[in-house]
Image (cartoon, rainbow, N blue to C red; front, top):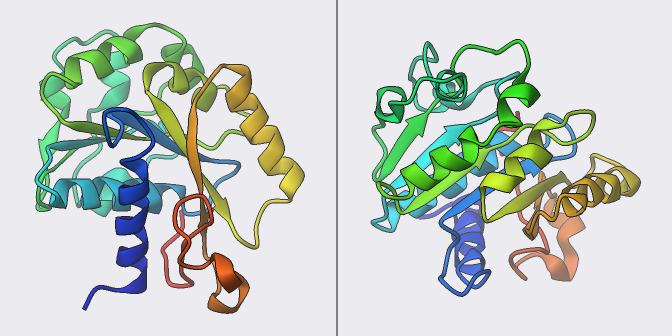
Length: 222
C-alpha cells in the first residue's frame, strides 16, 4: 500500500499539472525560507513521482553551498552543476542515471568560492534550455532564500517555484519575507507545501491538496 507521504506527493503532482497551460511545469525549483524544512526531500520526492509517470526527469542539485542530492541516489559529487556554470560546456559529463525509473541527476559539484556569482551569469538559463531538449521535466533543488542571493537568481532560469514551509518552523513573517524576495524578481510561485504536518494539526486542510499542505512526521528533512 502507498504511504500517506507518497499519496501526498502524488496529489501535489496532480495539482502541479494545473499550474500551467501545458501541464506540469517543464522546469521548476524547490526552495524554502531556511535549511531543514524538508526542501531537498520534497524536490527528490517530486522528481521521483514525475519519473514514475513515464517522463524523463532531471534533478539538479543547485544548493552548491550544502549539496545533498547525491546522497539520495548514492552517487558521487566530484563534478556537477558548478563545473558547467564555471565554463565547462558539455553538460552530459555531469549527468548520471539513477536506479529510479525515469530519474537522472546532475549533482552540485565542487563548492564554488561564490555560488551567487556563478548564478548571476546567463549560464543557468542556457543550461535549462539545453536540458529541455533531452528531458521532459527539470526539478531544481535550490538553496534556502533568507540571507542568500542564490534562489532569487535561480528563479530566472525556471518556469516557477514550489515553496516548502515546515509546519512548526519559521514564523509567518519569515515566510512572507521569503515569498516577497521571490516576487521582487518576478518569480512565479506555483504553490506552498507544508512539511512535517502532524495529523492533529491538519484539520480540514489535510487532504485538500496543493497549497494547503502535506507532510508527515517521518519525512526526512534536510
